[in-house]
Image 1 (cartoon, rainbow, N blue to C red):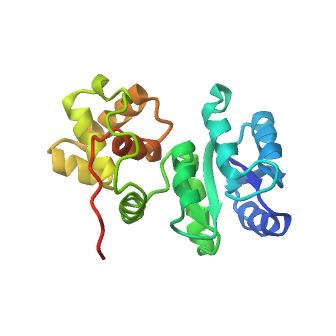
Image 2 (cartoon, rainbow, N blue to C red):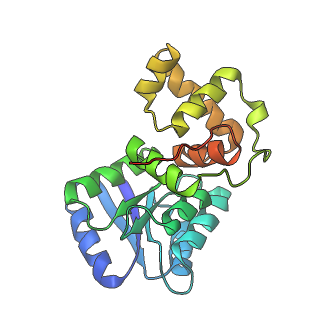
Length: 221
């Protein structure tokens, strides 16, 4: 059973709840109208996925995400930001705060449900194309180049795998590029996440660019 917390406006929550609870393996365990209430409910119910609107009164989605990500008791809570736009500053700030990814509110129902399942597995909701566009738009210059993010703790192969993750490659593509098995590629990535204290793949991408491990490439398309 996938346990979900909804944090959004009442009218939108009702639509999301109806869609989610039509699925046998998904349960909405709590709902909130602002980030502060959502944070309290996350601590109370420990959901698998917290769907949080980026802009809310009292406490916005970015601050709520930051506090969830910083709480050791909420390590297994995967925050997914709900937004009206594919690429905006709020989305990037939420990823830096610890969100696993984002969902655009007008996406197709089947895609929405798939995204919730992906988040519950602990995977990042960042398709390769989205990763590239997001990084190219907001990290044309690394924010903290040279910052000690713990990269020196990584092996050469782990650093290579992290760089490929940051370029938007899937595990299959990383395995092919590095000429290793898919299992080995996944192992490199998981070990890198553990050493860098990254909650998920999304944070790994941000760390790679902020540290200067990967230099952003401007997308002129």
